[in-house]
Image (cartoon, rainbow over all chains, first blue to last red):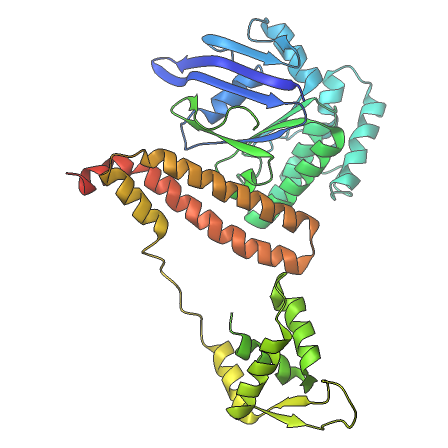
Length: 225
Length: 174
């Protein structure tokens, strides 16, 4: 295995408040890693740094064989669009778009034409057990359905890395497990690396291993054993 | 797990031979640990002695499977009582883990590291159970869930205790 992601001594403060204080982490290609820790420990900030959403004050981030913390915003944006997928706690679907347009969004933003993008998006509805919902808008979807749409959107571009921040946090435990089953199966099928932030042990148990973040540092094995 | 009551419960469905009881017990309740034949027959003998089962239709012929067991009214009453009464909720207030944490603090050992080690062990077991659930059927899934919920409760206690270690240290080592 080779590293898909690496954080070296990453530090980041929000104003006077330090969120990360020298976090180290290596995620191997194809690994599913759960990032755990108490509220405010810095786990989501670590995910945002690894994903090139936030730029650390100090330290280095390497992703897919290149250093990314020194890229400019346009380069990081391109990296996120082309190589990364995202699933967040509340789906964050665009309410004006239909479910299939939401799924197709990363492809459309990446320059794929509308018809082929929608065709590829539609393939995901059967795969994730939500066929028939393609034309619905997010307001017409249940929490579980919306989160499957969000998962499809995260995976439609066949990202090298899927970042999931509390992807089941807004769901009941049964629906959450269905979403996790689909997330893990789909990621494995695509060979995607997954960074999964969660405070729930039952969700973390779907990962290959877990790391603990406490007070802005990774306190349990930062490297696969 | 009460073997006598479980066998009685299986017998309430229908009169059965010892072999059938063992097969059904292993299928539903064995979880990879088969009930020895010796235990099946000794249990049935005790149930018969206590008037909870009787033997019926001793089939002519050779072999150990001649005896068929039938539950009595007394046996059926016992099954009914057992099923109706709730299992005593076990408070688990004196756990090994709690004792370890308190002693670690008293002895100035790294209690937090011990809790982290325990957390990793719990999560490793939760991963195994989650995999069993993902790849198994409904029965395996529900059994795995039972284990997962208990481990999750332990983990919550571990997290709560981790967060209060300083306060606990102040109390056990004033």
